[in-house]
Image (cartoon, rainbow, N blue to C red; front, side, top):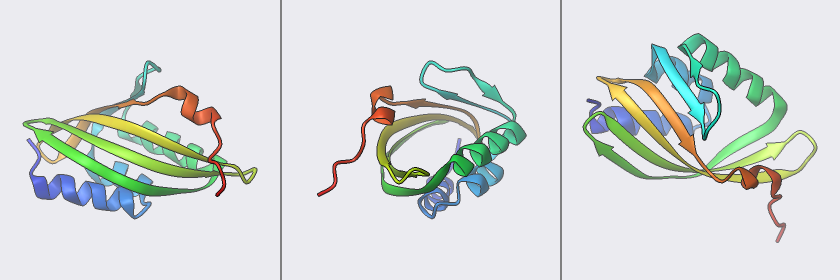
Length: 126
């Protein structure tokens, strides 16, 4: 079961935009990750490679909100709001809930829940 301090530290690293470092520092070597109903990806090294590939396709990601953060034993739920700047100059909001399973101070499984239509909707300028 993670401590509140450990989860708080994880959230802080992500909020700083240090996404690869968050995976390297807080995920177990055998961790898995799943986008909505997508294929489950296994292994921290593969998760890091996937994150680097995604970051290489966008020009930036800003965490606009992190919370609420709910901790219940080994289960942690975090509502994230990201603003993603695309290479073509467009921007998208991604409002998702990450449901994590922790063992001690490491994430062993994570699944993201969000409306996939968000990936197609541009942020209105204003």
